[in-house]
Length: 505
Image 1 (cartoon, rainbow, N blue to C red):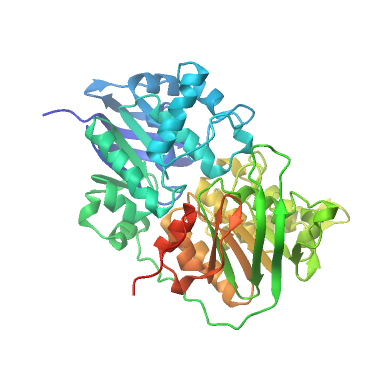
Image 2: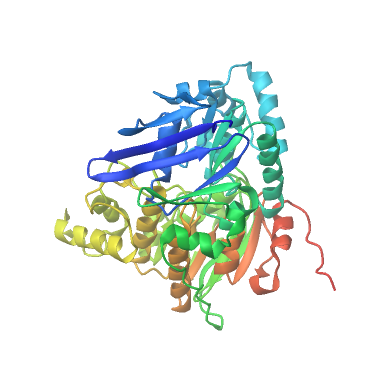
């Protein structure tokens, strides 16, 4: 029999007292698409780092095409034919897209630029090869990582949440490409929290829980509820319904906003109009790179309007266009940015200190000094109430998995009890159990009267959360669409710049 392309036996990895992987057995067949499923903290990312040579196992063996495999570095992995797209990206922000790719892929700049554009068109992952990475959104950076991997012609491609940047119409296009890669001899390790995607694209699925393999199944033979139960060990709660409400007070209003950013690579915004009322969730959909980052910076106060742009952004009936983030927060505004590490949290600081970043007004300071007992109690409450899997409040933020850090940041902002909550990509990279918990919490807050603005690239999420959806395309917002009267295909057409078709009679 032909040996598996990759075979792991008894792979274990610990970080101090934390056992990230325990006795992992995994076989990835040649010409297959193999899913790795599990909650945040289940050990998926650690296992992928071991396969890619970023980390070395404490115990166990690996073979590649039947031969012993010991990968000392990602460079060695790439030589063998293994490529990986990390959840937290490995790009140099001061370099352009093509300069980042040249660090891994040999070739002249003009040749690589054309290859990047061609692959972008083929995969629906368009990105400007000459743009600097610091000017790209999270979704655009993920596209760069995927393209860079494809340009190394891998035999095994590890993809972490590859569809999070795509509208529905392009997901199947990407899947067609992945199937062509598989049929052409490339195996794919596919990590996604979208269980229906797993069922649609994957031949096998290995399920991890608490660092151990708890199942190895053909996902096409199980429905999404079965897979979710295998992942989290319990049945998923039903989605919380939104309670019917009459229109509340306007907590955020943007009127006819036109803004050209200083960054030449940023997206200008044109004629932006939106309103978020108390007791309402407004969702903004769109493919990453269409102005989401620019709009978020204007709403959060990171970018302020000039004096001639006044009377365009209102919070709680006050013109805030020229106010900074602290002044807006003082009025009852809270914000969860899409970039967890660097903007939402400081990786090298403990959860206690990260809590202080925005929650210090909650009596966490005394006479200008940190009240360590109160700050620790705040972090402990957030960890407990939002099920943050961590050894304790003194753990550095950068040591948490992406999903657990997201739960902490969302919890921190909700604990501020704001009048207006703005959440960008609330469940990006978060497992199905944690995502469900975050969404239920947001709906409960909406039902209690909070005004919530959500920017998300996950249409399923917006249809579960939002009362109204607007689509951002090339810096312009669509008219408000009542969610219950709108189909995903209509939103998808707006996301691609086409006018929506009338519903069939």
